[in-house]
Length: 365
Ligand code: NAD
Ligand code: IPM
Ligand code: MN
Image 1 (cartoon, rainbow, N blue to C red):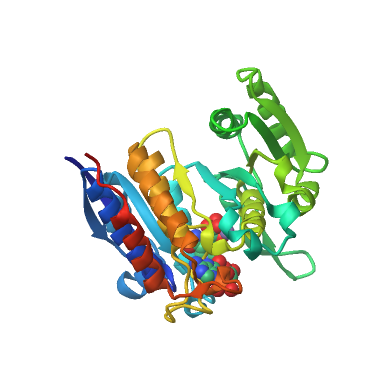
Image 2 (cartoon, protein in one colour):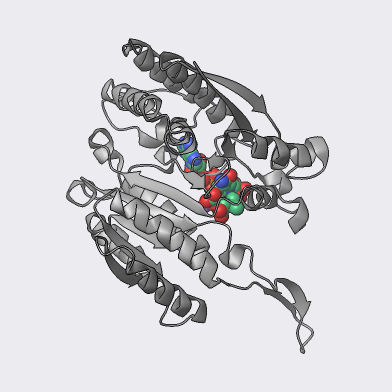
């Protein structure tokens, strides 16, 4: 019997709905593999602002750091949108990522044959897409100094941020991306804006330098504007993409739509040591929160990534992924991935169906 502690951070909006499903799925899949989980649920984001006055209470970070892995739902909502920076839900999430030093965010986007009709792209374009965005997560313009507001010489308000990367930061995300690419199709595309930005010029130089350590991986470079276009023109050309924090944020949302819905895409945020942070790439979806409409599969698949990348429990991870596929094969669809002839279900029911599919698998001998 293996034991792990997992910190659950449901957060805001649809966060609690999808985390509740993923928790049950983790428990059952783990049980079938002889794994026991100890869960502690902690507040983050708007929920934490309301309960404790800050978006990331010390206790939430302390628990997260001490656990074996962290599963997060989503944060944010209209209620807190007007808050000053330190009291924004988003600030809590950034503090958590920084606090755990999870500098590498892996965001896979694969088109499942079951969902090819849910993509807004033509079948011929979407079919067979299987790519991975490796997004730098603890640097770049999200964290760069100086930042803030000031007044210019004309007395106007000015807001400013700084896109900054050091050699150390680029080299470690580069090595992570080359390692990821090596386990895939060994093709790595680095996305930057090196035709304009100094920070991207250094990025490209360091990625190219690190490439000499990985002669078996084929490296290419692409400007981000072209990459955004190529993703919808011919997404199958991509295997592994490595990029900075903000380009990775944007391109992964774009990539999600190739697969049918942002409600399907999981992510793993990892460092060289210490617990990983696992979260869907979507947000708190305030427009559908509390209506039992959310697709829980992105979070369920994030739980699979938690098992694989966070705990090294590959078999349990595969159980969850197989159960998701089986549930889709049976025709169950939440609204975001619904197509004619399929069974429209809510978040809860989708969760129950994944549990049934898990139940039908053979427990480990
Ligand atoms: P969003 O991802 O929350 O929603 C975008 C659209 O996708 C909405 O129409 C929503 O209904 C839909 N959607 C998202 N997840 C879905 C799911 N699981 N099932 C079905 N439909 C889904 O992005 P947004 O509207 O730009 O942001 C809303 C809030 O979430 C903001 O406060 C934002 O800061 C926050 N946010 C948080 C995270 C995070 O916690 N990691 C990520 C992105 C946005
Ligand atoms: C994401 C979100 C976050 C980000 C926000 C909510 C801080 O968009 O996880 O993709 O920009 O990283
Ligand atoms: Mn995002």
